[in-house]
Image (cartoon, rainbow, N blue to C red):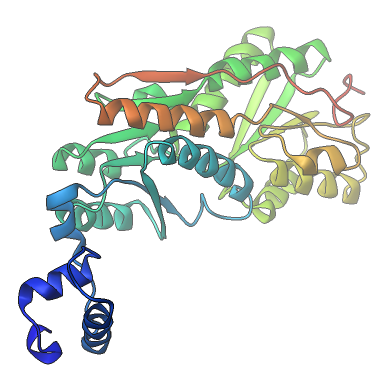
Length: 328
């Protein structure tokens, strides 16, 4: 580029990096040549000098699907607000699965594209956690504490929230409860179902677990199968707002009146839960708080503080029209 622009290598460096000492005409000529050559700055080289100042977040398509999009956006926005106050950018990429995330971690870390990686939707056997530990890359894990290991982390107290759901349904007289959740491979799913069972089973009830892919369509299929079975449940607990909305539609189509014949609870709140008919009883959404806590833990990691786990507690259940006393 220096030869094509008719200047020295030092002038090219000054022009490309916006440093003083180069006339406007010369800078324009160098930038035009760089554009013609298709030149782009090396992220790896720049990070050796200044550090990437970037927080990485890689999510799979299931987590980024419509059923989870609102919760993910709340988390990302709050996380970005916290780290941006310290001059860090958030780099988000969607991949097909955990193994694709592992490959991306390797290339990003080799190029020093991120300072800290944030991991969400933790799996029971998660290759992403293993890869980050192997790379010795700084990371913050958003998920149940058993998936964090020695890494820093943030988790929602799913045990408390779902025990609260279990106690509420028992008070209404429900003993046959179905949990329609995301994939069983997720630690969050296991924690939620275990908490429900810990309350309902000792009271003489039964929790049936129906894991799905988390889409409204999959939730509708599972709900129909349950409601048309010989011993249908009287209460349904769904992971997300959209899954619960799908259940309301299936209930109407199968002749179940909500809440008189069937109670429905959503594990995450949103505006849709207020607008449905009937409005959905939910666990309050805390994704914004989780994102903010994750940002604070990221900054603590960058400051060299010991790895620690922060806990976010969901508030009291939002009781609405989709739940009522057992009708039979």
